[in-house]
Image (tube, rainbow, N blue to C red; front, side):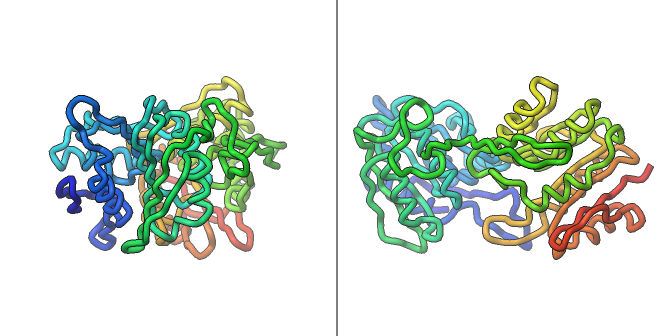
Length: 397
């Protein structure tokens, strides 16, 4: 990536020879060129600006701006790890960048914010609501997004939370939103009232959102932060998985892998007081949702929460039951690479006789993939409806 701040070699950890995914996009390049042209992030050695970057995927913003010691807000464990790796690979001290999760503290008096516009408007509202009370009086917030993610509602969100907002012309299907902090901006969840007509995090029903769901054995309260899968509802795949959970007393150490709001692990534990549950998710917001769901339903009962990438990173997890509803979308593409890796790791970490319980759309053919890994005789369908199939794969003893 060649930008005014230098040339950087950036790598995505999920890129393969068959899928050479790029670690930056035209919106990253456009934002960096704009920052250079207007001198917003010039460091005169005495009064360096306070810079916050939100939603940097793989270091495309963090690496060029590292000399300014930015705080980089990242939800994904995988993305945070990739940012650190890409900084090091480009000769940049990873310690020059502060990695923060979307619920962690932000600096005071932020001069410049750079926000990668996410697909979900609720996530954008969450980030802008947290930035607003931390902005310096003359702060500038730049939204950088691909045009498919930038709508009139996106401009409205920047205007409501930050202040007067202009947009640039689209270049290579990317566009910038240029917002200047206004004196009457909303101060978000740190203390002030939401703006009139705001959406998502800005409405009266702020994130996290609490919903009572009909679960096996009675209602369960699910708590979801912005952008977490199936927030506010029980999706059909999870419902099918819950209906196929094993009998209480069958397992001792269970993992809710890719836990989202944590409904599966919480229901499993409510049915079986003796089971130990570990929740794992790449998303910090999802993991915080799972923790809140657990505590809301089961109080101070012990559980383990791991912000990580599967069953091996940051550390191996031993178990005798893994429950998973694997994602099959990566950005705008459909694929099974993530699901396959989850299955492989489950086979590696499950104890002899341990079970992997998987739900997926019928067309994904998880049964065939599991048979390749575990053996055809060790995989069976234990639940189904017209759209979803629940498969159980058992590790040989």
